[in-house]
Image (cartoon, rainbow, N blue to C red; front, side, top):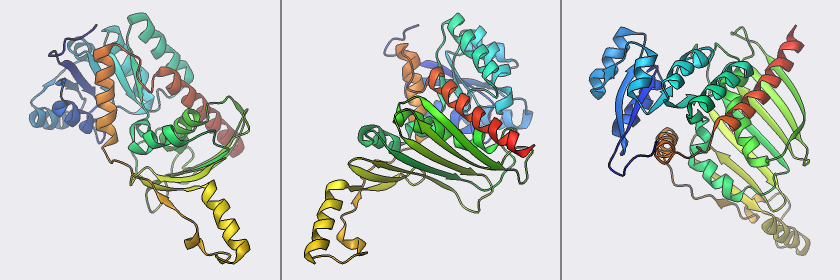
Length: 330
């Protein structure tokens, strides 16, 4: 379905908890969108959100899907398929928060239903809409080595899955998008602390093109951190997804530094002699950018930037890592 320039896309949210409430907030204010309503099992929460945004609470997922052109699925991961399938049956386009599903089998069911009903599925890999990622997509050129670190304090939300599916999957999606090469080998290690599944994990991924990525994630940290470092033929890049800033060092500057060392114009270990370029990043709210893209994709009937294929690929890698960790812990 194509929309006229004046016609608003009717949007809904299934699940208005700590994250879903922000989906509702953004849809309510987004030009070209109309927050038609929500589906929420908590009476108190539903009343709060409906009063705040003057929207309707739907009694069933089928009713929500029938009333909406586009719906965000923001429920625990193990409920994604159960919630998505009735919505797709009503031909609602979906943004499903990451990971796509808890298993590859469920992911296949959801994507098959989307194809059957002619619906778009965007997966909520929000970092792909972080202004930092926009910079990386332009300047990351055949990376040879990448490291990522994603740390967060412990909270009960999200612990229906391990830290790989909860946090690391963000960086898996980023790395797959930047490296653009089949995977040759994965080696993983993880530790359980408070959950039934891993709370700390590390994965080393080797790609067919020779690139290596080292990914670390923890939900047992005292601080939050979301960083990526990229080493490539012409530069070193270090970027902070949380604070939307970073810097790069160019190979040409390092060569010039080496020449200065040889002629005595610089001292060994004097980092101030190496030009470090601060990266100008125009800051923005990634979720607002992501939802605007989703609504625009629905409006124009075009495939979203992070569609089902990338979501499924990231899920497949995450499950491989999770299974390796699980086998080692037995």
